[in-house]
Length: 475
Image 1 (cartoon, rainbow, N blue to C red):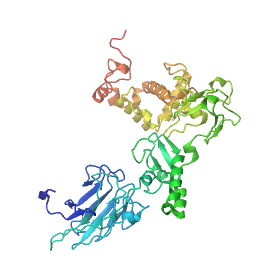
Image 2: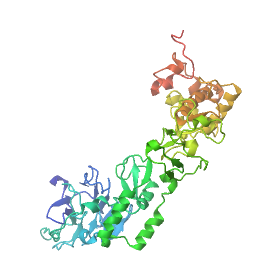
Image 3: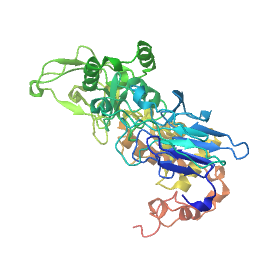
Image 4: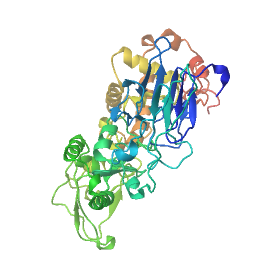
């Protein structure tokens, strides 16, 4: 440590050795980030900023504030996010605690000749093998006598890491998996109840932060956990814990798979039917014929029966975009990809979201902001713009480059967004100058008009009007 920073007010002492880290700052952060005072970059069980140890300069009090996802355990009591705990002599603190083996996780209180607070990480027998993964004691140095550091009792010989249990442990609750689900495409696994709580806060994977597209039951791991508990019954969860887990499970069957009655052809190796669940029921009498063809949804990449040849049947719902001809399953039985806003719908029913106004006018952010402000001043949104534009299209006031597009045209999200941008330009073009700010109407037209390639730059977009046609070098 840098001696120029003054005298250390405390120290972190590794429980199983005399290795120490002196504390100089009044606020010391512990976590996985490299900028933390005590960093464990290789341990994914520690949050980016797990907790912080704070000392009040005036009173001399020291407390710990948790900032983690999984919590911090102090004296066998869990501290959750944003909670604080006043630290006292003899406190035992775990950044990561293995509930399944508390006898191995809990450290003995060290015996010292000074006021001392101990801080312990994940037990050695359960920790990942990394040089940065260490456990420490927190000590406040005494002014009246030299520092004496003592470590806890060494772990019992013969203690070995149970690799099977490590593989079957949920990284959120640090216990054996219960009702395991796997996320796609990353394939990380969690307890259904644990992921339900995370799912309400984030659509990313808790482990790798990859966007989650689908959720599936992992029957193989569930069977392995069941077999493991037969060999190690002492590691079973309590009945109350299991009931609590089941009550916190918010993952429904509709989230797991669509409801369809599917059959496989002989080429696919089976003539059995698969029954799955969904919101939009297809006619129950329908069966996939032998040698029948299937379409792969462009959005969720799941198969559906190819029924495009039955367009004369009124019960058959559209399965592809009219413009790009790509297949989508949303109108057929409901697309199950997480984050899907409705990948196929009538143009008037497409859910383009509020982000559709970002750069809607030829990626010109200035002109797009002018349009957004105009709509806001009238208490309108993109939905009103789409409705008014479709009315103008029906009345012949607006003309689109593709004459097939109307309010009832079946479009995918991408094609619908392109058509919406073209309508938005027509809408902006027809706004009277008297209803726009003087700073907007006083700008001269750009020679290149709507075809200008420089309008994406802010200074050029603000200086010239681009809601006009090209006048230079136009034959």
